[in-house]
Image (cartoon, rainbow, N blue to C red; front, top):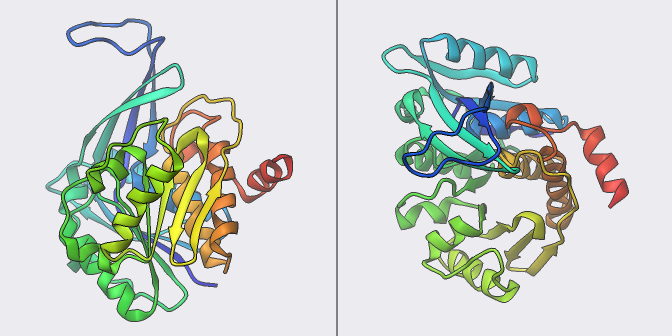
Amino acid sequence: MGRVVVCGSLNMDVIAESARRPMAGETVLGAAVSFLPGGKGLNQAIAAARLGVPAVMLGAVGGDLFGTTLRRVLAAAGVDGRGVRTVRAATTGVALIQVAQGDNAITGASGANMAFRAAMVREAPRRGDIWLAQFETPLATTETVLRRARRAGARTLLNLAPMVDHPARLLKLVDIAVLNEIELAQATKSKLGPKSSRRRVVAACEILRRRGVRTVVATLGARGAVAVSADGVLVVPGLKARVVDTTGAGDCFVGALAARFVRGATLADALRYANAAAACAVERLGAAPAMPSAREVAARLARA
């Protein structure tokens, strides 16, 4: 079996739960606060590991207590974290997350994540691997890592989140791109919203395919997901869930998708599996702690 190798961010999430989010200049009292591991990279690596595939984490943390804690979290989840470097001059990344009525707003402080350089990556890509990256670490590092993976015969997966300006050549290195409706709209300059028709979503995905991506997957929240490839359009309907916290649901989807591909699944099977995993994740608080086990995903699929 190949591995899911994640090159990306590691954060400590500071989560404040309240009845509603404050307006500008307003203070809302009565919030509950939690400190939980997160960062898109760490979340995706843990999601893959909990689903029973070998997972490797490559990234950077600061020389502080949060960095030490995140290393322990990776080890406890069964993720190989030997590729996580310590940048003693930086702080570990932090995400301030406001959760209200099952939805969230996030402010990120990148810290050591933006000190992650390609020279820090000593892991060699292997044929059969999935190499996965996001946009919470430097673009130059992401481009170099994906190019190395492609040359070695590994598959590349890019989660275009959070959306940043990126060179056109980057997408030519991507086998599978995953992004939500907001990110899809930003990446393609399309007018998309929560109620956009499937036709408009597919048209936007085709724009990215013309730029070089082989398969584009758009996650649509409660509406499920749409994938566009050379073989056509695949639609996976959403699953009902008792939403507690949507933080990390997209990361769960991405990590589960990569895990299923490593096991040799078809695109249709991988999408269905990732959709079920994300439905499990939104029923719990936090990002990394909400990632489900293979048994939980199997039970959710059995009820679908």
